[in-house]
Image (cartoon, rainbow, N blue to C red; front, side, top):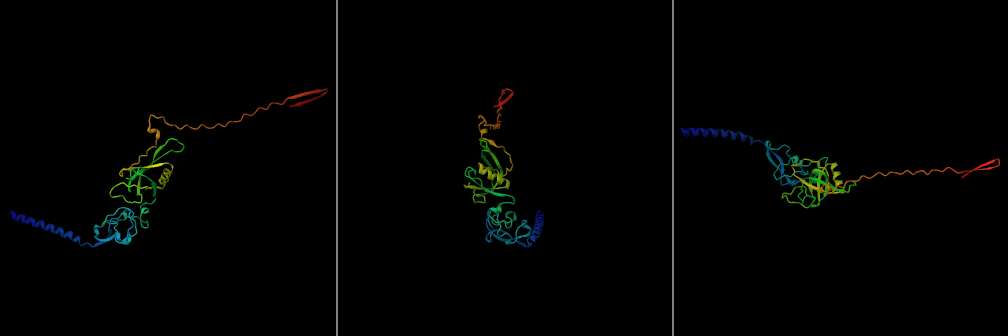
Length: 268
């Protein structure tokens, strides 16, 4: 009895599994669609060529939205996000049509790429890489003030190129380069150019998840030494224009001469 019951239960389970597999197997008859995938690893800034892509057939229901079905749709376009071998090439990972490749393709509409000279100190020992977020600090003497000040000129600025490298290194090692390119708005581009010419700039590396802007006030050199007297700017005294004092005019001397009935008066 127990054996018969187990056999009946096994037949019921087998029949259920068979029906389910047959139902799911019917979806495998769905016609496939050829889509474009990466033939090898593609780095940021690369220009897509024939050797970089290939067509692979997938079921229609498994394709991501926006997948390309023809090579001609993406040939010559620039890559703005890394693409691994065999990965779908989607519109979000490519520059706009006719935008070219390289650095220009990475600049969004309304933004500007500005390069600044750096060294190991300014570039945080070379650990600033493409994709990093930095603050730009400037040190100088504003206006006619004799006291040096440090001020945060820009906050949370994206780094899009380090030297001629547009992609982040896989090893995470520092890169010693003389130039770093930042992505800024047109107004910030003017501020950055002015700060580079009038003083010395310094980059402060940020955590990429920390996007808050602090609006930090300027720091004066005198604040580093609390006990030292503060060099207060002495206001210039206005110049008083002296009005010349007029010289009093003396009244002329008069001498009266009487000769008989004749009277003469001489003034001198």
